[in-house]
Length: 389
Image (cartoon, rainbow, N blue to C red; front, side, top):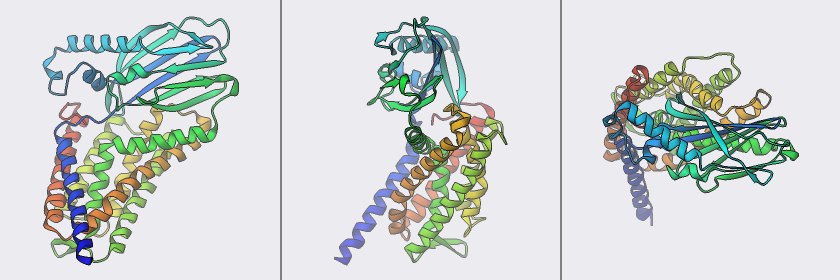
């Protein structure tokens, strides 16, 4: 029975390690990370206007293009095709006010960067309403025809406050009852929690930074080599130190940035985040910090906090509910990190003494992380397009 349990642990560990390496290989093969689309409606008296933000790479996917096809198309033609598709999709958006369908008129189209990704932005408006509405219904199912995995955030701004809900291909519609006032505080808090979880899971740079720090957590330095720790408790303590340090650090700068106390240029923040991923992985190959990885997590976690702040800013949180949003978003980020740790740690510990973990997963994985992060650093600092992640 003991032999069976040991074999099972080795198999589980090997499976997890193989999965990790395949994830990294998939990233270098230009994997498409699901994007977030933003839909904002503003009701001012009887005037209803809106804004839709969608990633250009999602429009490219809707046109049947992958990252290798895009550079082959002339810039003017590509922009024309992007705008045509965006306008066609927006025409299918269903907005009903007090049971009456509204005809939406597109008033502007432009492109802009959001969260380090190029987005298309459409502005639209409905015809003047006869009366102040009691109910507004939105059905955005048409958005998800270009990417069923896309995640959406719907915000309604009106005199009663701002209501924010998440939507996706399975749940693309929502009904706002304006007579009931703004949605409950707990409901809005849960939305921020879900956004925090979502953003840590799609934030591949944050995930790879965390993984680069976690890889040596089941190892200890012995001279110039790494060997497996002898107790699970020691590995668990290492992980808790790393995750706690990262959490405290990014919470500090996330709060400072969200409160407009301290701001840094987005390009600088995104470039330094990429550099932090590369340095954390390089430390695995040529250790400078061995037993105190939590210090690295804290130091670079301060920069990652500014990255999270840019995401929170895009959610359009009101000043009056900022504290609630900060707590909810942070809780979501921690839950997202915890899910990664829970899946990774037992398997990594079971495999820690094997050649597969110490050579393939630890060393080869760290090399792949360095290469990806270096490409990100060039892309973000020099405005190049090297990878699509």
